Image 1: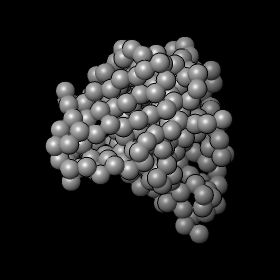
Image 2: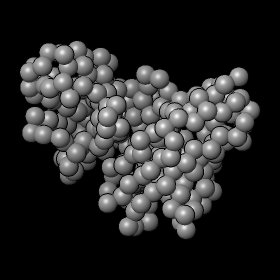
Image 3: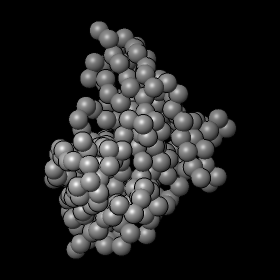
Length: 112
Length: 116
């Protein structure tokens, strides 16, 4: 069975600093990997997805993630944090059977 | 275009009552999913519909939970004899059916259920 581990339930950064949110996956087959963002009282919005076409994936709002098979990781980064990036971020894995298996989420706090 | 909509946005009920949660997927999306988001359990898959059929209902926590989808569109999640542990945000998502599971799921805003 596939699973996802997100290290750090909370990450705090200053505005303009690098954002790094960690995600490690476990899957017995090549996975599809996703990052979703959730703003308060809203649903989930897709930031980016890995589907084996390229290991470095660029998403919306300046975010990107790199798939590293040797490390079973799919960490999310953004070079410069903005106040509007404050939200909860979820990593998820799918192995083609449609359902998403989510990590526990990381809340990103951005201070001025 | 319109996104996934869910109703009601909030539902407060008494323990033991039945509740129905509704999901309107994006037009043309053949796949529909229900998830539950709670403090203790995070985001959990409940059930997946392809058209009106549910090939995967493995996440339904008990036989008090059921769901149906009609006309390949609207879906209703029903919880019978609600318990306090059912309190959570219930999220619905829809997607086009792609190949290999890489199709994006579009999420609705959720229904916040509180069982007193």
